[in-house]
Length: 360
Image 1 (cartoon, rainbow, N blue to C red):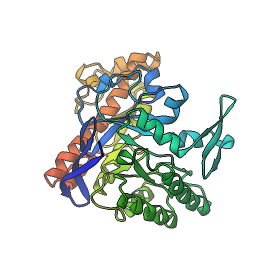
Image 2: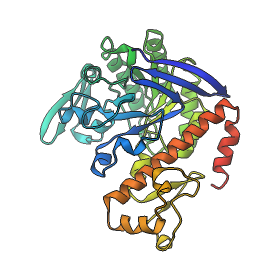
Image 3: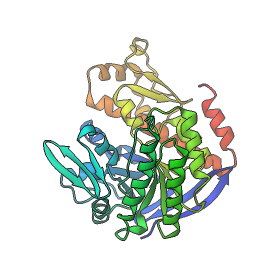
Image 4: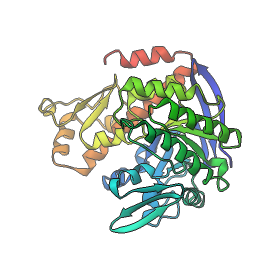
């Protein structure tokens, strides 16, 4: 089934819509659950968000391929829509051992030489039953000082995308690259529009959230959105902090992914209303009998477990405690984004954002 997108309401540039996939419809704006190796290690399972709706499960093509998985749902119970990213970011993180050319990416992994092609990434996604497929893209550290790298990134991503075509075009995204470089973005967006006009159903914006100032991130998102077709779903790669979600919904982004929520929970940082956080390790919580966030309805807060008890468990590196903190942070984002959808439909998004941030 081809990806379809229906817009049901607007508030300025923000949209509330429905993203239709073979495994169910997703009311947007929405956020993924990035099911990483870290979540598996700490006992976080999809059933931890069983009371959530309109969620896309995202898994990493690179790591699933490396361990021989043949199905996006392998090892987990998940009936809803799925997304797979190519793993290009992970390959780049391998650093000096990386080699990229028009055919794909070569790298060393565990002492062995490997090579991944754009065609193989999409082939695996199709065979594995992925609903929303991210192709192989060329990523560059956002704050790199060499502008030619960003132009090359946009050009290489365009070449790789053409080598990804003809396999699963009905569920394939185009990824815009170029960092903060406007010329590189214009090149990328020009090719994106061509591919979207030729049947690619969705667009993702990548190359951000690598230490750039927030205003620069938002300006780039705005720059991209204003040059994209209005009727296609827009995904923002790797961005999921609450303030960024709200600012980018306001600019017309429909879906988000990222690991910040669960990663921060794993390190004891608890997200609360207002876009703030506190560190559960702090001594002030040693005898604090409050739940993590009195305004939160997540499973952790509903269980009435106190900050004091969670602090004690975290200091002992208790897996159950760390899982509870990750669940809380993820649900914080989920509730935030569902509230934003309701606000768009009622024409109250600006008020919703200012009300959330008033105690910031």
